[in-house]
Image 1 (cartoon, helix red, strand yellow):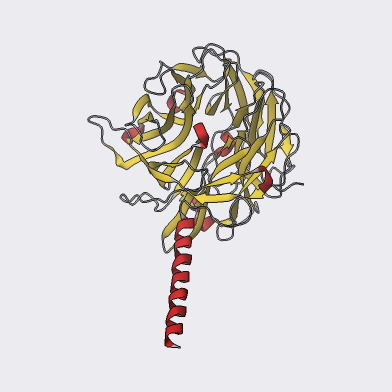
Image 2: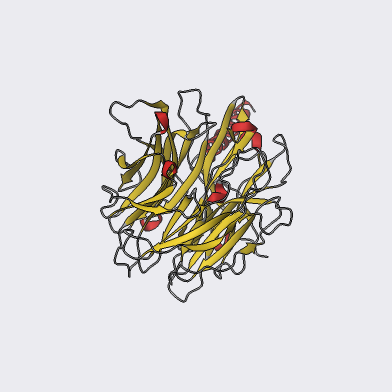
Amino acid sequence: MRGQNTLLQRLVIAAVGAFALVVVATSLGVEARRRGPLVVRVSRDTTSGAPKFQHETEVEPSIAAGPRGLLVTVYQVGRTVLHGSARIGWATSRDGGRHWRHGYLEAITRPGVTPRAALDVTDAVASYDTVHKVWVAASIADFAHGSRTLQVNRSKDGYHWSAPIEVAKGVVDKDWLTCDKGARSSFRGRCYITFTREDQERLGVRYSVDGGSSWSSETPITSTLGRPTGSFPVVRPDGRLVLLFREGGAGVPGESSAKALSPWTFTATSSLDGGRTFGSRTKVALGLPYFASHTRAVSSAITSVVADAKGRLYAVWETCRFRKTCYGNDLALSTSANGSRWSTPRRLRLAEGDHVVPGLGIAPSKPGRAVRLGLSFYIISRDTCRPVNCRLTPYFASSTNGGGAWTRPLRLWAPIPYLWLVQAPAGQAFIGDYTTTAYVGKVAWSAVGVATRPTGARLHHSIAVARIRPIDLPHR
């Protein structure tokens, strides 16, 4: 009997140990066994240092797909209350998103200039250059006295990253990055980086023809209405570079009012010569935003844009224009055959609640084939909630006919209380100004911010990547 009890005890201990191992493994980098899509938390904030950085926090992911389904995402780590973060993190998967390796990008320094305590870095975005076979990650380093540097890091394998390369200096903000992979493009292999020069109230565009090792002189883009920001570049298969940006309006709010501001305009302009010059401006739509009282959200300043195999463009943003009282946002979709003329924005009727921070992706296809779009976003359940009971939930929806019809939203994570999220001024929560979606074949990969219950004063706000296959999607 004693031998039987000992064996039973050993079996119980072994089972408990195996269960604990599974729990640890699924919390970071191994497939979470749950119904629906594969959702993996890809890293954990291990930074420490200056008190101004909130530990452990990760926000604003950008994800890109490379050869053989390799995935790279970059994001802010150790977010401050006011602006930026302690580090820029990266996470890379080579096995279909089940396991991830992660680390930090080196930030730039300047001789004779002391950076802020533990260096403030922000606005990370990644792209893959198919011609030079290199990953390029852009971000902004913030130094004392308002001076900043737009920088890039490069990697051949997604694991080993170069020292930072300076692209531009000054009061720069809101960078975005894309690389031309069009088979018919005269500029195939050219990578473009766009950004805002806040002190000059204009945009800047630079390009690289060697995988980000060096960058061109700057092409300025002025604004007719003032305060341009949130530039988003996209390249058509024929090499035409189209740039969408926001201008005019009352600017970003003081983050304390839920009322809509005066409308700004989303504007498009194009370059036919590889980013050297840009043509006339085209009005895409009025961008009427709604800002929830307890959310720091400037994401309505940023459109998310993709191009299909024929060159048709699809742009999504958040707006309250479809609601009589302008309380709460919906997502709007506009399309263009060439970037010059845009369709009237159409409301995407996805679900109840306040829809924010859209990240649009498109599956690779051939001209004439069905256009598969994927859209990640967050929903705030109630527009008038208080911080103690506000909830934010990440979702994904898909369309197989170019945005004409959409699946029911697929929930990617349980509703997240605001008190579990990164904190911003005036008692607000911050999830990020953008999110992104990438495709490998027909499989979508969405990078979103998620959180679990804090441990005392320590947050557990991290980046998760969701794999969404067509069979995972609910249908209406």
